[in-house]
Amino acid sequence: MNLKIKLITAAMSCCFYAPIFAQQVIPLWQNGAPGFEKLRNEPEQAK
Image (cartoon, rainbow, N blue to C red):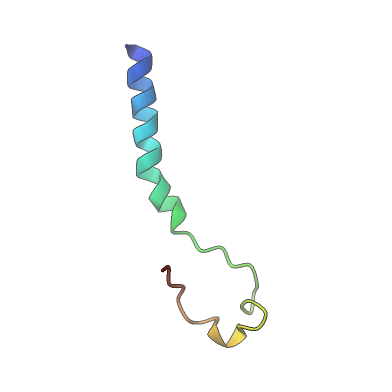
């Protein structure tokens, strides 16, 4: 029973923190992607 509670708590923690880490932007190129330098100041849009 105690192990079950720990597993449920761990699973809920992952579900809570996953969206926070998913919203990070990691730039790969300093001046924008090759061929898209003019769009480097445009925000990314998920579709």
